[in-house]
Image (cartoon, rainbow, N blue to C red; front, side):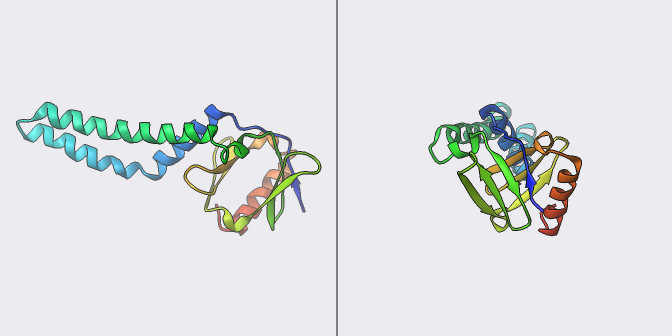
Amino acid sequence: MVIKTKKYQLTHSKYIKLALGMLLRKQWWYGFGPLAIISLAFITNYFWTFLIIGLLIPIGYILFWLIQFAGLTQHEMGKIMFYSVSYDIDSKQIIMKFDAQRGMPMQWNTIKTAAKTKEAFILSFSKAQFFYLPFDIFRSQNDLKLMETIMSRKNLI
């Protein structure tokens, strides 16, 4: 069986928000370093120095990735993620269809991780590349259930 979706276009702002949120959920434990530096502020005589350094490190890290994700929206290789496409999904592959004649197949083994949120499936290829498939692009509840079944068979969720 093939799941055919409606056309969907991921916006730049939605992409940046999702990518940054996924990165922070994966790498939350990086916050222990700045917390250790901030805790040094309370036990040494250099309170403001350690406090400022402890706050600037996570702010700089988040800004770095924010710039990277925003830059990908403008880069030629990243533009394919922002086309208005529909998807044909089966147990062998996912086909991004730009129109009736043009499409790009993606094998399931290229997907590193997947997640089911309250409003969508997120299929991730790397830190910066993913498919965002909101539930409202699926034509029926059966398509949603089939998608979930395929993903569980592929050990993605």
